[in-house]
Length: 209
Image (cartoon, rainbow, N blue to C red; front, side, top):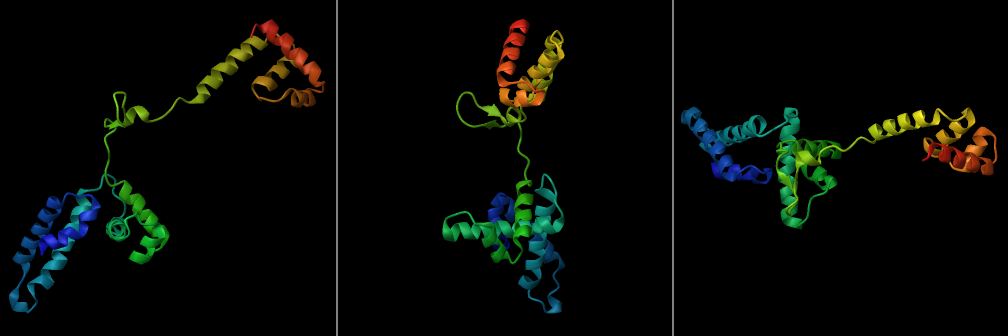
């Protein structure tokens, strides 16, 4: 009986042996508390005790990040429903299917799936991918912030253009900072596109860019 109840949770990713052990603890607890003189069948008394022990195990021992209790319990129900759908239909269950199966809204099911994803913490030192040049999860986190390069470029540009007159400096700024076309620059500063082209050419030659 304990093993059968433990197997209800085999789709949760926990080792079966661990689940059976927890269920067996619940079985012993039920044996210690059961009073045959009350006229209640042992199985009737034991099943809720064993299931309660299993749920307590999942709630207290298997979550790296603990969501609210109700969400934890729903995630177990959803996990079981996913396994059933995958077994019968040979594919991953959709959220709307799970919603109908467990009798909860799609939003609740989505929250439960998200909570389940946070159940286990994976080491950032575990290699990702195959081959000789695999990287760890930590090495793949983050990226170079383009803002640093932009600040350095703007500081360099400010220093260089300080030798230009005001109009030429503005045209260079609009071209290389605002990334405007020559026609758009001409409209901004009130000169023709041909003049913008000439001023840019002269300014770049002067700055030796």
